[in-house]
Image 1: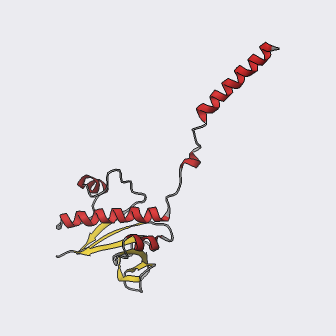
Image 2: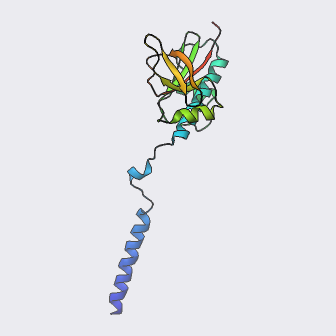
Length: 164
């Protein structure tokens, strides 16, 4: 009987060891979590600030600033990871950044930018004009400045107008 009890104890110990080895492994569907709306808004604002700082130090730059260039320039914080496909461009004297954000981001974009008048979400404009920049806190803050290729609901910032 003692031998039988010892065998059961060894089997139980082995099973418990296997359990301890695999318990920390989480299924992949548990490992991925969507970032919060506030985190997405803050992530966009960090990107936007990097674009603004880059353009201020490279006033003759034209086109789109690659992400790697923003990283190498030191304008993005160390370890920054873009949570969406943020984009930027210059159109004439206009410098823009934009990208997809969840519904409800307008509030956080306004609050976390200290209610800045150059950041919000894109909303359809009047027929024949560009889209508007809309802020949940401030209403329409820029009318007709958003190109049609920036989808409604995307975070958008008209960073500034540069001297020609």
